[in-house]
Image (cartoon, rainbow, N blue to C red; front, side):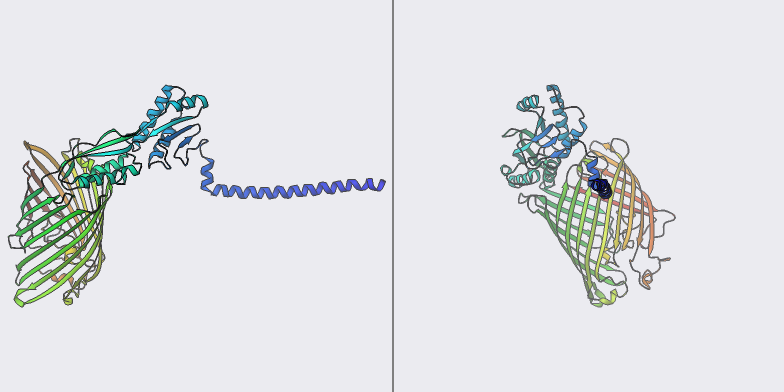
Length: 586
């Protein structure tokens, strides 16, 4: 008994030490696990976001309801997914409404008005948020509050057509832009501001069509539905004629140009458009062309095509004649079309055949140029132009092509033949001065970068009325260049229906004549001192434009070089360049 009693305390101590050791090991193990978990928690953005999430998160259930605690918002009738933008608009409104759930009918009215306002500002112009009588009784009994959203479904579209475009084509354009379908009964089409704007703008993009007032909404065929009425009218005349005369030609082929044009639309009633023009100079250079544009489908996609030709004869010591033909075909699509933003894309294929003949030597050369141009255009919408506010636009294009000639000796130095690419970027912006829209600053930047020495037809012009106006239009063009035009203009009435616009401007151009200069390239500029591949041109001037109510416009520009700007390389240059133009259309 004594021996047994003596052993028992020793066993208890060993057990106690064993328990303490096990506990310590478990504690260390759990501390390591907790430490690792803490590191993972700190490194996981999702976990951090969850740690800061609101106590009552907003969520969207599979039936399309928005739930915040004991408040729910449901779309009537139920949908699997909320229309784009609706969830964001309503959740944002709920987050700003810090008051408790509505307890009185006055509270319900206030909540409904604020949610409706948020819904309409979020892009649902006829949307409505209400609480039904049954839901009010349920809220009083259970404390669970439910609001019903009637987003404004389109049940029917009415067209009042006073244009020459066919009803069928216009209705298809409306259905496709408004609801992305041709059968309104087969889908749930919710009226949204963005789609409505796209619809009205695409209608007005159709040649010969304009909106005759804003679309009108009326109660539809079911609860919470609307009927939309679109009224369109004829835009302009079915046929338009124009004439022009100016001094904006090249000295060698004729500076004075006389031109005529004709255009027509909706010959087949589908938004088709056609045009033709012809120009002749005082030295018998003829230029002319035709073009056509037709819709492809009903979503704004259009196909374009055209052909142009030019023929000339000059005698600069040696009789020389030329002939060129250019054909093009392409597509144009409005990715975004609205009152405040437009984005368009275009793909254009071009092919040019040229022939140059030295008449005295009975010798000729032929060259071809084929290219494809990918172009994107963006602006801040038609509203800015209509309000005479501050519109801007940007056009960027990438051109890739191939040039070839049957007389390789002419290309031994410049190496223009073969594959080439160029990138062009054109941007413009108007800044209004005052609130009338009659005084403004106009800026325009035109740039080009080439991959190699380019064919003359692909170079960028440095002189003339669309570049540096203090230099003639036959000033040497460039492979790489940037031209900035900056002007201040003021428009005011002079007679009933007549307006005079006066302006002053500054033009600046930086250019690299040849992308890759070759040995002896400057020897071709006989009698011109200080020939350099890089040029910085600048000038200033004044302009006047007379706009009349009969479609006649008269334009005059006077421009001079700054004293520090280099002399022109053209023998037709004058100390003061005078640009005249008169155009008429009816």
